[in-house]
Length: 305
Image: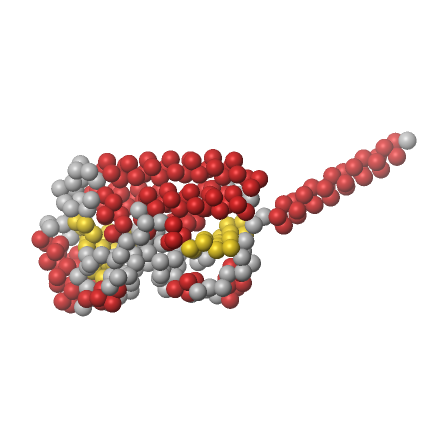
């Protein structure tokens, strides 16, 4: 009798183990794969889905979004994804004509876009006449709209998680609204009204909060300015009595350091948030974390109260 009870107990344990493995496998197989093309889209989606979906960013952290090219492995991964959400607006040219096997969303079709401004001293901008500024995630009102669109799409592919997604959406939007208010408050009273950056990535931000961003070059952070252009920018720094000039993550700091040296000012980094650096990824920094760092640096450069 004891032997029978022992065998029966072992059988029950085996059955429970098999059921657990089967449940995990079923859950794994039913999980959707979602790809996103930029860090801002990744940050939104990650906060909404939690661990309910497989989420990946199309390029590794620490890679410049402007020069990134997909590998065959990535193309296959994209093709096998349930949903791909990409920036659009000409930011990643390789993805614009991509033949998606499943659903894809060009997020630029849902947000407020603006044309490239001529707040630059570099003549190459004539080639970008009428071009769309693709850095629209730096306008927090666009981030709110993107959060709403992404939540809606996630619910459509996983209705069972609707309540969870809506709760996370509300939390994320609340964070964005507070961040927006903090920008407005901190940049409301400033002695200066201009920042100098190395490429034209911050016009959404400057337009929203009432300051000017003057760029050394246009949309491309790799554009090489000539001596005449650099002299003009040095003059602008002195005319506005600025204390700091900025270059962006992933861009060369050589030109801006030369300008800072000639103008006797400091040089610092602003994050345009197309992607994050490997170091920022190790620190698990979010859109909010980096935007708050940007806010502190801009407010100091503008000498805000």
